[in-house]
Image 1 (tube, one colour):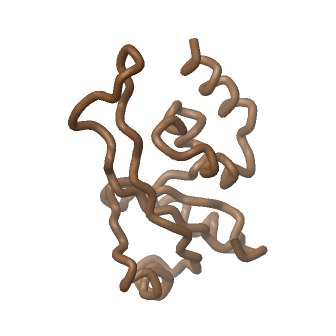
Image 2: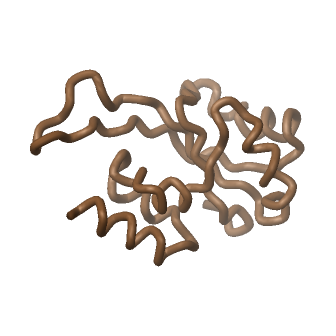
Length: 125
């Protein structure tokens, strides 16, 4: 990530085709007035029950992008009006959603470490 883009956002159920990735930042600037850096689209993992993947779960495309540090406050409320709402990656992890993604995605988290650790601990019980 670029140094001025520290807060990572998760826009669930949002596919960005490879050929449109370059258009994502201009779209967000035009529609929401915020500077972003497109990071990636990640397919979610399936739910696990008794050690076995649950059929028909997982595979949802979630868009990850970083928002410019100076635009975080400006985006804090509008992100919640988007459909579906955009969440901070730390909130996703802090509410137990981290198990949906590859382990490397946790590296996007920059704050809320205690809540994330507690959520992961309760997931492992």
